[in-house]
Image (tube, rainbow, N blue to C red; front, side, top):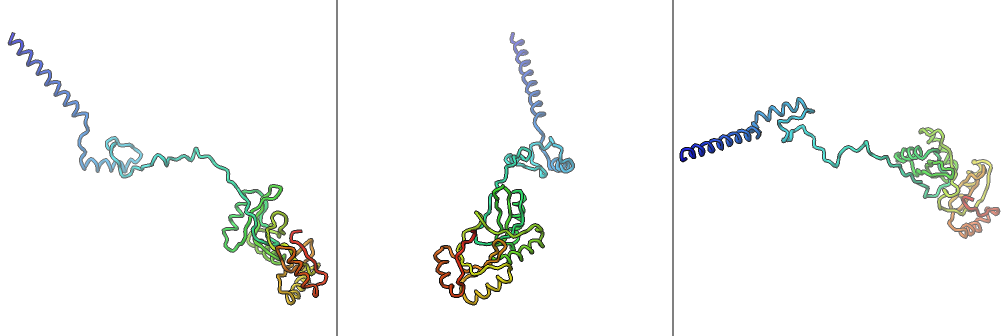
Length: 251
């Protein structure tokens, strides 16, 4: 009985040892071997040659040519939604009798012309407005006389705006400004109006303007926000201009 027990004991110990050896060998083969410097150099060389190929050998290592892209910067251009542009009027805010209209058409092209003109520091007072028919227009400049507007129009035509023309400010686009004037003369041509203006400047220390109204050249004096101021000026100049009378800009 003792002998059999001893044999059984040694057989059990032998089986246990054998299982331990098999288990150790299996674990050893499952664990990766230590990477030497030479292995890293070789892997890096392979990485440079095959940048699009995934290397299992250094799967857990960050290679120099790997590109890290944060999740929140993923390319979503394919799913991007194009939002409509909101266009707004840029209406005149300063007083001017005339402006040069350089464009009339769609809002998209009006905006392009507005941006192009505004980018040139030589262009002053650029506006983009919408008329009652829904057409968008681009205006440039601010001119008190038709002659000044004509000179400006010629420059815009030369600079690439062949359809430029003079637009007289009226209605809701006529900005707040000196509304009341005293008219001292009315002429069929600009030369006569300029002569009358020069004579008035030698007699009156007030602002004098030439206005083209219904194809007639008008000579106006003053420019006041209130009617009473224009009435007072008319009384003062009655000696020189007995037929003068008060007019309101835009009417």
